[in-house]
Amino acid sequence: MDTYERLKNLVKNQIKRKNFDINTVTPETTLESLGLDSLDAAELIINIEEEFELPEVTQEEMVEVSTVKDLVNLIQAKSGK
Image (tube, rainbow, N blue to C red; front, side, top):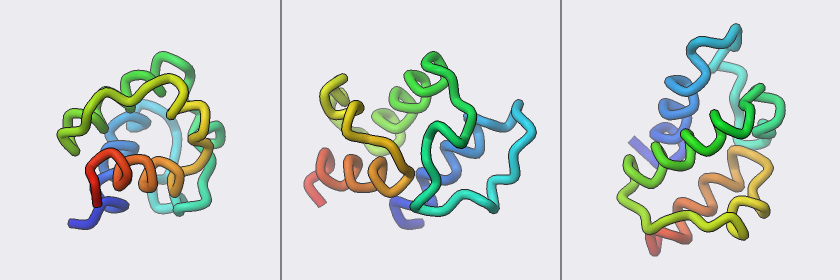
C-alpha cells in the first residue's frame, strides 16, 4: 500500500464518526474540508507519526500543511523517501 492509501485509511478512521464519504478524498482535498477540529487534527498527526514511524512533526511543519497532498509530502520528507 502506498503512502497516499495508508494516509487515506488513517483519515477514514479519524473521520468515521462524521458524515463523510472517504471516496471523495483526493490529494487536493483540504484538511479544513474534512471537518476536523484542532483536536482531531492533532490526533491525526499522532496517528501519522505512529503509522509511518516518523520523528515528531513540529508545529512549524504543520502550518505548511493544508491538503492531503501536503500531508503525503510531509510524510515522504520526514521518512527520507
